Image 1 (tube, helix red, strand yellow):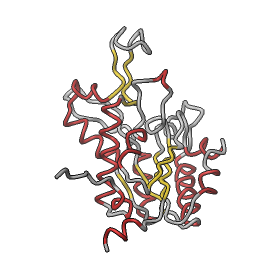
Image 2: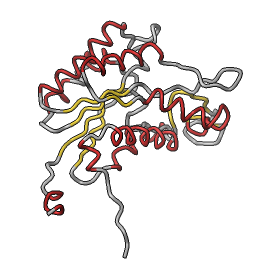
Image 3: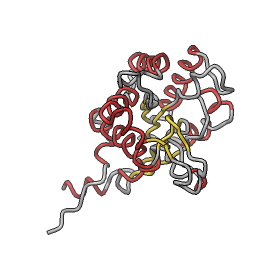
Length: 238
């Protein structure tokens, strides 16, 4: 009976909307990797992960550039929208800057329009940047905007995955030096895409992206979302 029930699961789509910490990277950017890239391999064949995240986008520019509207129009009942912005919203010197008031309003728009299609919004706080103080303690880098996400999630009763907090904990475990292994840190001539080397404490390499994706997966399970029932189950060899 359980086998029949599993076979009858309705196919769903999980949309990822956000910025470069999630997005699919061009070959010329490797080993930079968005966490949405490994994330899609976590689920069985009833789930399609549609990664719409784009480099450099904020909640405001994602809407202004007409990146959100096709997602909202494509949603079907039972689909999910995972929403993670903040990196580009919070920086006043960036063209993508979004005021705190507008950031909140944009998140609420994503939520209301997702629910209008009988789909499930999930809010995610922005992944932590790698920043340690002189004593080797991880520092908050999204304090204000991550707090807004938490507040909106509570007010709107939306499932929340606190990637900011969980990734801070992970980076603290790795420590100031070893945590470089999660980010785009390359010495000169270590990779042909970056002949001069690279020191980037925001964007992940393949290992870092997998770690972030696994935090999100753990959040899905902790929240007991229906999506958790569609995670790939290992085949036991007899």
